[in-house]
Length: 412
Image: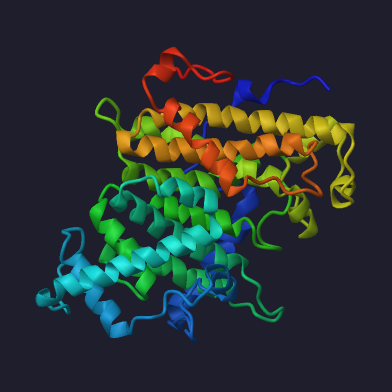
């Protein structure tokens, strides 16, 4: 099949604040739930675990997380963190200044726990963060944990008669707003995000709100389990992954000759590239859950049917479609590479390493004969480590003059 190359017409990425017919039903349902929640003022019922931490998280980490501090101490630590910032309205302090060292130690432990959660769920991503300076590394962990908890609230297994997900998400959304504008925290893991909020004042709430909208798009019967066009899928990719690029850029910082606005488009491109890669890696697993993320317009062009994907039938048409999808994903990685050199010097290697590791999943799909219906493409830890020398070279000035074989020259 001869088709226009996907790299020739990549759409603009910033969908911030956009609502579409495909997601409006879920957003309307959440808005309605939020109004009911505000009127009822019924808080989340915490049993033994905090919101967004369930048995799946505990199993992945290997121990209980996020519930080791009494509420009174959480409140004290929140007061201590707020006292380091001028972002919030004046409040009566509840902390003891003489215990500052103790508070800092506890906060360090919370960050470490956030790193453990990140490592359990996102090994490639976590590997990249280990190359960052400690303050940046911890901030990224805190942001990841908030994203993870949001995902667990929406996607975690629930009893078929349990209709509390929208109520829980309403409370979660309200908690985000109170943390952002008032510095209010509820549990220990909130403390790390509050600390990040105080240290990086330019970090906006918008990407966090957009991520919640993206998670809504995955809710059965309210969101979408099919996408007609790539434009629809693109919005989803922005909301669930491109937003992470926007959250991360203020943490990474930019070089002296650039500004955050210039780095925005490449950061969004990297998030979208990651999400497209996830989608291509997980086609078979998503089919088992009744989901198809590949745009219907692409399936129609290549003569691939839903029944074929659900039946996991690999044929020439499917292979050609996968080649097209992989080329599209790689085009986003090319756009993202331009942004690496815009970042502060200490952030370049971690981001480049993450980019290189994740993009290699596409190569694994190719090596598997494009069979992502029955085989899972992944890199071993050793293979990830083997990408680091090339990643380091790509962050050096000489790579502009002498690119690695197969690399395109990055045009700034």
